[in-house]
Image (cartoon, rainbow, N blue to C red; front, top):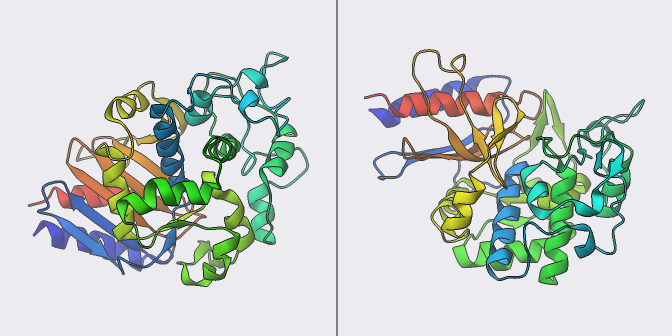
Length: 343
């Protein structure tokens, strides 16, 4: 049976010593296939899949007439000096950077988390050696020391989503965590989903461990700091409900969702970005025999995938809990799709 094929594919991945704890769910739109591997209520960090929540909130604020995606961000964040973050051929255009550019990673603003400063470790490297926390002001300062990209071209930037988180807080008059709770968690009844922060730091050890190679990371300070670019915690059960709501019109207006899926541009192979969400396009070397159509959604560097494939009517939510080998969740996603198609 198809479900057995999917389970065997996930069993094989979970037995691979390179993975961490595997939590995985594959479901078809018609309900004929719904395979869950692991405890559906076990919490795990969504990492950058959190960006789906950030873009959903900004879509709601746009519908409410409280933000225009094509307006510059800097005037909306008067407490932050964005000077020097986006430079085009020697001209500082930081005050012109728009909400849409931040959502699409086309602002040219560097990535504070994995961007490299000359002679210094990345923020990611620092965190994995010794846990630490930071503020959005710290992020702006660190980013200013990084070489900017080219405005208009794709450059994945967690800094951009830190700014979007600050923008949500400014417009909504609340914390990012509370905005997620009021606008996403409560309306959808997501009992086990929240944004990790100071108030929930004591729950860190309840969450599926993050693994970097053979090392288990204990980094509550860092995970409480990423917020709008990677701080949500959820489960397989809640994660699938969130993914459904994102794409069925309950969180994002259909006309805005269509707009978000235009103008795909590369960020890093094999991922592309639209406006506020990713597309995973499978190359033949991943699946040389069976064609796998594109998936849209988002992934996270902790081994998380939250994607749906409209062409096949499949949704996949899960994690392999491994930061070091970032291809592993995509490989399992492709194998799950191939297995789901077998009869």
